[in-house]
Image 1 (cartoon, one colour):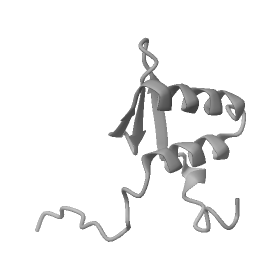
Image 2 (image 1 turned 90 degrees about the vertical axis):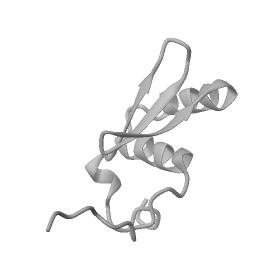
Image 3 (image 1 turned 120 degrees about the vertical axis):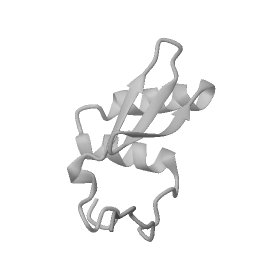
Image 4 (image 1 turned 135 degrees about the horizontal axis):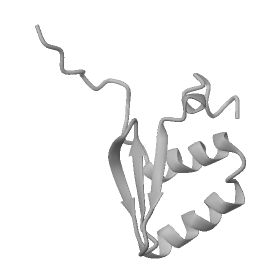
Length: 81
């Protein structure tokens, strides 16, 4: 995992998810909803999450991969002057 998470950001557990009754997965990043996974993709993700549920880093990595490239690090933070 060293090569994948060089800055150890996944150790902070930024990703969380909720599994709904309709087998839809809602993924959050720092308590903000960023993706909803439905149908076949959700079924595959649920299976993969169950396989690695005891390994927090693997769960975080799966959630990071499924969300895609949404955060580049160059976003501006709203600052009050």
